[in-house]
Length: 428
Image (cartoon, rainbow, N blue to C red; front, top):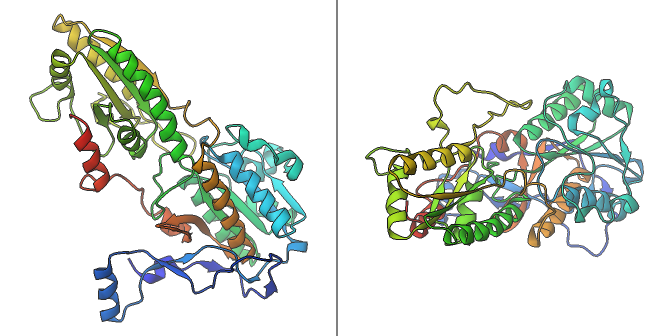
């Protein structure tokens, strides 16, 4: 990594005194090192090379946008995720109460709402209509997938005199925010575009945690308990749980560690087969487990085992994401067929949590994390930052260039402490 990869775009010099009082301001020079290994840091110093580091998030003493003349807009795009309404609420409260921004618009149905052809009237957000929205799952603004023309979207922002835009979504939403920021910069418009990482899969690179993930793990754990009870309550019972995780198996891995009676954890990062003599053949291993224990719990991420589908044509959603085939149903079918062919009894109880765990309100500390993400996103925008994602690294909130955050997808490393711990608590 190079230090220049971490540079954050600024609209101009911040010269306006912040209206916030009784708060500790963050210096513009405050940074969070990307590499925490002291040996690596020492190597940078010996070579006289600038240490790659994130700009630290937080309120600045001097801001760029004059709050009295600021108009802000918020949109949510992509799939649902616990905490969306929390983020909307705290963006609105921080803008209006801490900074005194008079107008905050909610853009409806993601980037569609910035294209007048869709005729989606924005919502004016205030303290009253956002007061209790955190109690509900989903998003009061609605969401959508698919790209819109950045020229058209910037035309809409300019026509509405919006100079601060918050885009809540995953990597596709962040790329859309990047396109808007680039188009605004090309026109010389002073619009701060800030992305807030919403990915229940926790798979955005250079960000160690995204909101909604902790709630998803908690909810998956609740169903894992039920799956375990169902498995033990039947002879040769198998509780099969499918959770979200298109390309990265973090939910499955964390839920397995949090619920140690999960026996099998299947993720996209590690390949497995169904019925052969190899060490990663699931069905023979499962049959041996049934002979000894007569019950098992399987946690599978939705993107696992996609190579097991024969002659399956690739399909994509409106955002260009590859649509996975249903590994849960395939496993249920193959398990039943395998045991039937051997005249063995099996009772498979299947739990598909893909939509269940993403549509609930944020839980506990996850809700707190949503609030702090939103607050730091507002601080960044008012200070004139743009084309960036508000992130978290170690113990600090950070500013991450969108180009860096969307460079690659974060996945489980099979030699990491996380996966080593999962393998130590499972049997396959």
